[in-house]
Length: 200
Image (cartoon, rainbow, N blue to C red; front, side, top):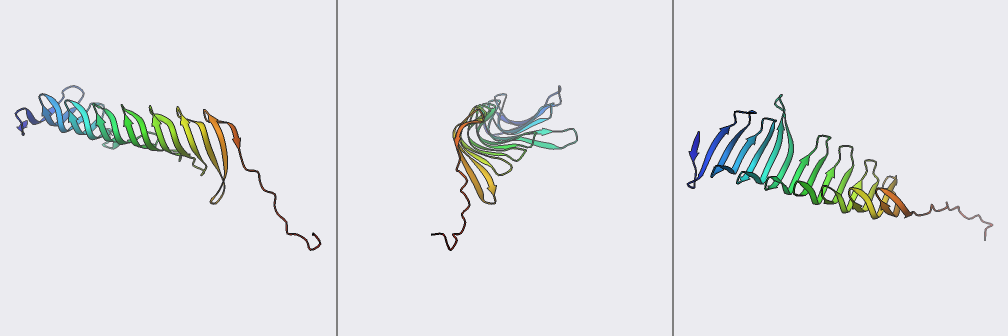
């Protein structure tokens, strides 16, 4: 069933695919998905959002529908030419969540990654890995502030070791592939004792 919309070649149509059980419901232009629409594949993936000339383009949501009816969000954000591009939020199977910038289906630019184990990274990305300046928070309260390369602590950075409530010991160093090659840490100050009356 189709209904004519504005424009001589723009229609609203629901097309059901006979193989795989998928379908598309939404706007078309010259025989291609164009405008707002919902497309479901036979593998349980559902995209709802904007299309341009048959490709996901603009703002949209990608979900996975399980046989029991439960729907899991996979990605919410911007698309360009059928790939993640722009600003968006990705949900991972291990419980991690990334929110930030994308380029060509890869995390690129600035973003935040909440790991499922409690770690948090805030900083720059390149080709889907931590790269540039950033802060990596450990679940125990420790944190590293500095440079990253290819997903590892690499370059100049400061590691803050939690030593008490609201207190930390700073380790300034040079890192390579998550290994501290050289560093400086403050010496523990000797405990001071009150002077005795006969000490002059």
